Length: 466
Image 1: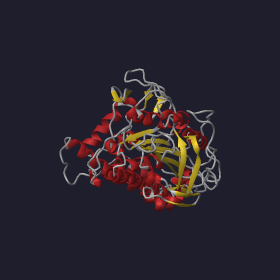
Image 2: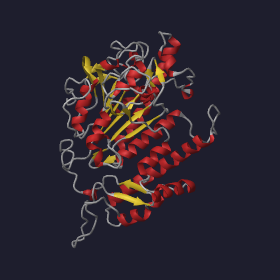
Image 3: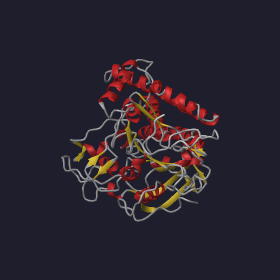
Image 4: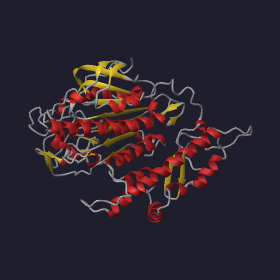
């Protein structure tokens, strides 16, 4: 068993009791490193849930941001009522099974996603501003300028506590240069994560790349060779750490051994799906129907990426992540829904009934995927609670209604209780023009970050505690 420097190693004392395992303990093998899930042997956690977020001994608070392109059909999105006694809208109906874990919010606004004198380009601004709250300089050249995003603000302060400071994933590849939307650089369209005003943090769209970044140790030539050997032989990551695992299990109680077994099973299943996805990428040419046995359904690919993010949180690989379901202005087709028109094209429906019906299908499809992810987070044990209890997961878009291109009353859903600092299960109405960045300030507080100002925030968001 290998542990980071200055962390206590797991040993028996003379009474036969096990000394606590470091919460940063890693299982390591040839070219592989995996953080352990939270175990009882890592020390008492009975006080953790009562401790304020970021306090010593508290469970770590994770934060994720899921970006959906092109806004929604707002009439079908907006629920009725307020507080806990509200009625989910047709688009949000898939959240029924997890409604006790989520808050639906209205009134939140991205003023800097508006033109503010810069003319067309709402889709580029919607993605660039979504997590930054800053106005993007209108340029298709190298002089891009925006601002640090909330995820990277957090990663710069708490990223040193995990193997990866942050994890950026997405469903569509993007470009870092060129012109993509009405004179805006493709960098704005392709990224929601920004390390600083002119440095986007590229996302990974291949699940194999995500998996390897999470677990592959490629800091030296020997480790890189081991990774390539593993890929050639298609061996499981777990095969390289089994000896370390067996040594550890002899020192654990039954409950902890069950947790180790559960996360090993989870990794093997994700590895299998990642390998299938990789084979599909390797053998299928563009615009050619893939083999039937390769998982090509969009819903399955989205679920796989969600599952990788869940695994990264569960194993404390990172505590900060972003997931772009599509680039700003995405014109993806949804064959699975029998929707063969492009998403962006349909969003300009001009109240055409047939086009509106298709947009509503797409809106609900994305909510269904998010609901499945929230359910898995809620069902994943983490200390004395669930992984969702110790997380904040925001789902939304930088555009409200795709047909109007407006940026007030954004479609925003927040899942998770952030170490019991947020009360969920509610529809929360905020005043019109309330900055979305007020929510980000509140999230940064709960993640344990020191933040005096962010984006165009005017303060913290109230009502997160009932």
